[in-house]
Length: 278
Image 1 (cartoon, one colour):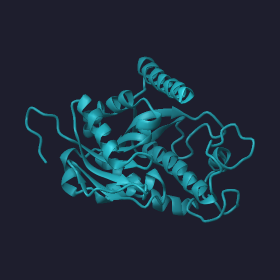
Image 2 (cartoon, helix red, strand yellow; image 1 turned 90 degrees about the horizontal axis):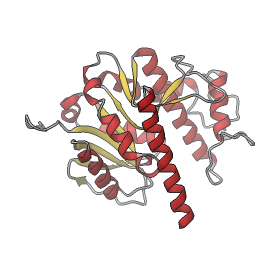
Image 3 (cartoon, rainbow, N blue to C red; image 1 turned 90 degrees about the vertical axis):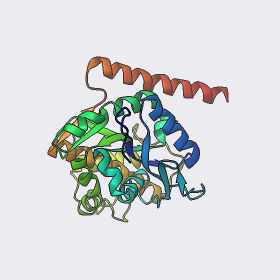
């Protein structure tokens, strides 16, 4: 679909929902896009089998996801499902999941990511844009790139030459032993990872007494394995992008860091107050 000369082209997107139903998820995403002077077209992957999956919703086709690797399986399946004509519009693809709307400063993050769309189109190296977060515990640098920050994957852009990096993450995970059915504590799990990255993941998911442990209510072993795979995919993607191309942050300088951090903090406080009021 070609944009008119006076309109910005649509943003090709792969959007994944689990906690939100597809219809309100799409409505809110398109409202965010409209606020930035854009619109989305592409695929919405519904990872929650209990939510009905409508066949089409305007510019966004809704498909049922497997939830095999949580949000990341949605990204893999959605990217595979994107029509070639959609990807040819700009080359860039926006990846977003519903935690943008349920846990983050959605307007601030979304607009700043979309503002980098034009730059990513021009970069001639693999590039990803989004919010960069620093490593703060155990593994203080990405083991693949050596960078001290990683790209948060709840809302990010990849240019055309970066998309093969995301596509090959499953093969990378197989090589690194992350798809093993063994428990995370087993020596066979993550056998190809550096010891620090393996311990980083374990400290966030399975080690008792860890202050970094995921605060989920009695998660099942299968869910822990899926979550570990998602953590791996996020850091492997950042590492490969940093090694082979560029990471383009929405929070690069002091002012942008302050704006993003302040918006995220205010969002968390507001949600906490609403929770107490309820």
